[in-house]
Image 1 (cartoon, one colour):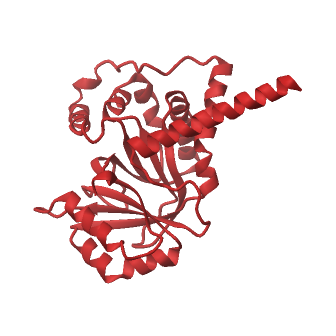
Image 2 (spheres, one colour; image 1 turned 60 degrees about the vertical axis):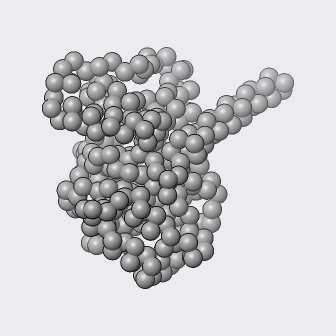
Image 3 (cartoon, helix red, strand yellow; image 1 turned 135 degrees about the vertical axis):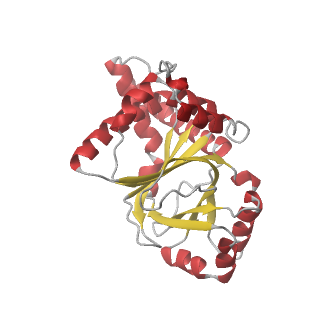
Amino acid sequence: MKFLLIVFLLLAAAMFWQHTRYLHARRDFVRDRQRLFYDTRAFHALTFVRVAPGFELLEELRGLRLATQEAEGIDWVYAGKVVMNGNVSQQLGPVDWSAVILLQYPTRSAYESMAASEPWRAALARFAESYTQGFERPALPNLLLPQALLLRRWARVLRREPSNFPFARMPGIEERPEVQTRIGELLGESDLGAHAIAIVNLQKVGTPEQRAADARYTGRMLSAMAEGGYGPMHLGRAIRVERDLDFDRVAIVYYPGVEFFADLVRSTFFQKIIGDKQLGDTQASITVPILDRL
């Protein structure tokens, strides 16, 4: 009995440690203000914006935030400056998005009221282009994401799997011009992205064959995330709120900084699995946190 109690306490301590370290990363590095517990009627909305020439991004985003101040129960969860649009959606087209914001509304009707309000419409109209994707983010499954990664980490230890770290550089990878350009763009945001980036993904699942390949890629990435202490922050079912676009999932994933991500994409680990990432359509925007500047 005493042995079982000790095991239980050790498990509880490990789970508490896992929860607190992910919460620390979310609050202090990603500047993500998602409440851990909220009403089941809550509705989330991602808004992609492209700033018009001659306008300043932070100033325009502050205008959007000001437009929501009079409404009750609206939480600004995350705001990110787009470093690059890594994967471009066939449905959205090649838009050079400037930023992505994530807001939580008390209900879907609260979102619809805000979307139709004059202050919001006027603030949004100052941007050259925008797109909003709604999604349902269930609180409990998202709350347990760090614990799911902890289980994966324990499974790695029990199976005695070799470590994914440190990343080994893929031979010849830096000779590719497109890689040099993207790495330069990443490292150019070393100020805002020193400790965190968040990749905002809109996803439409593909054929059964594509899903099987994508599952292999996801499994390998989650294995590294479990070992490295980073990973998904927001997962949910996509809900159409504007335009005739069809996405199935929303996923926002945290990585510990631009230098880490640059090492990841140049690694043999990543280059050997990226070919298995197959979706019917996807928009993946790499962002650095800016909510604390709005």
